[in-house]
Length: 364
Image 1 (cartoon, helix red, strand yellow):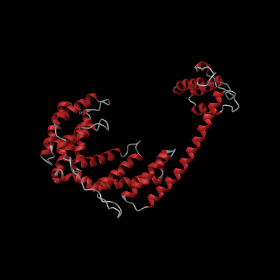
Image 2 (spheres, helix red, strand yellow):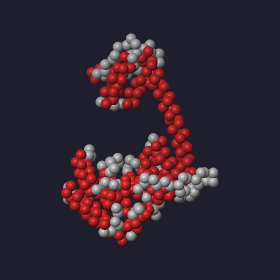
Image 3 (cartoon, rainbow, N blue to C red):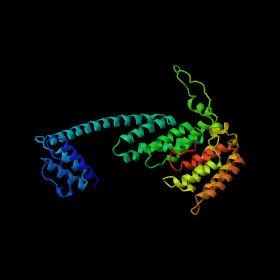
Image 4 (cartoon, rainbow, N blue to C red):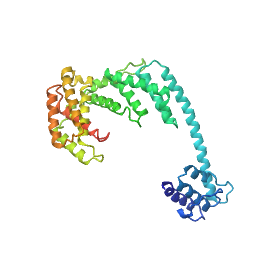
């Protein structure tokens, strides 16, 4: 009786806080439903305990609200005033929520009336998220034809933007779709993939990232942006020291010690998918010229897909030794195709593998 365990100490504290009144200890043996509004501390104790035992949270609250206003007991009078104040504040909250709901509905309609672009869809999704958060019936919001149509349009626009290499608008759309449908995790992998693409750009080609992120048309009265500063942005120095032994030891320890006990095979698949994201992020061609070669890129992608299928087979149970052999094979396949720097390959593979543990683990 979780409510019962809570009610006893709280009520005892409230009664003890009133001078001149003894502490009332609530026990199941004295719990009996009251047909009349409670007029004494003992009446209230028994009524509240009975409500808590049956899980009637509404009745539990009503027991306090039914306290007589003319009670001579200061403790009961104080409780009645507290619940009256609660009711007033709840009513204010509901009135504020109703007003905000109307405003958000209008904003959503206005955004959806705009010509369909990634920017207008993103703005509409922002209002849809606000509508979902304010609504008391969240499932109904997601089933509303207007919102369902918006989700479908936004998902299509996000995939089209990603296919064209428009990473920033694609990321914004997928992140907002994921926020709206977070409980179902429908777009979680998409949002994470686009977040990874931008993080890779930021690490490996910060100048290109700066161009994509900050070179925008600016109003006449706005100051120009400062020029790009590449000081300390050499990824080779940042990744110095990453090698096979570090990655393999990390994976072995993670598989053995992480609280979720994620299988090694799942981490290997996650690492491969992360490398796939790297070599399909076309704006990284400045840092890694080899991924511009379509044939070379296809050869490595085919290798990655084949290995993912192997690891996902029901009878696949790779151990640390298998992981070491696989990692050597991945390095050979890379050297025979796109020729990523070994530290970059290992860094992204390791981050993808650790990403299967939780969203906070990474190779540093």
